[in-house]
Amino acid sequence: MIGLWGLCGAGLLAAQEPAMDDGWRLLSRYLYRDAGEVFANAGAADRRLADFGRAAGLLNEPPVTAGKVRQAETLLQNVIAGGAQDEVASYARYLLARIAHMHRNAPVAEVETAYRAVIESAPAGAAAQLAASHLVLVLLYQRPDLAVPDRIAAAQALAPVAAAELLPDVAVAYYRILAEAALYYGRADTQVVDWLRQAHAIGSSDELLQISLSLQIAETARATGRREIAINHYREFLARAVPTDQRYETAKLRLRQTEEDAQ
Image (cartoon, rainbow, N blue to C red):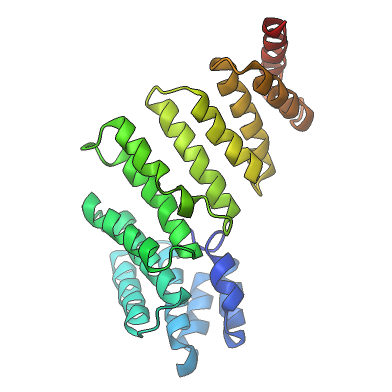
């Protein structure tokens, strides 16, 4: 499945056609087949937007078969062939890139090119930010031809798009991905702490994730000798987490140890 509505809907649905309100509402409620019927019956004036909606439903309605994927590709190509270089076309390119990545197992070079095409077509749009967030993962984990520092540098270069204000949760995920990739590759330094702090400062809509970020910052800051930052974020975690959280007592112990080390 290609999760769409929790992220990219914020941009596209703001400009939706009123006649298709029911289709978007059904998609947001995961009623993909019902939404598809609404979009299939849309008028000619709404055809491109309706085709996009049908494609999104096909790519999310389980089971996602090869036949559904081919049908979705055709619909998305029709959206782009309509000629308008608008937000709908950008989202269509984004979903085609996701199909190449997730359903066709296309070569990495093809997937990277597809994501970059979305970004280049409308770099200030939500679809570009989504594409950049996926391209980051490709660069970090699917480019064995690049040395690790080059992978991280290539992912950092996407910050102007991936960390845009348009989709805050995507920006949070971007900085977390950078930090976690660096840690995965054995690099724990102050920049990793700064990436996590940037994610924390933006703020996740998921309260549990935001609380976990506080602890992640505290642990990483402690490991890199930034005791004041560690103490502040341990305290924040303990103030917001429930005492039954399995991490709670460990965080209390770590806070006490870090405070003692700072004296």
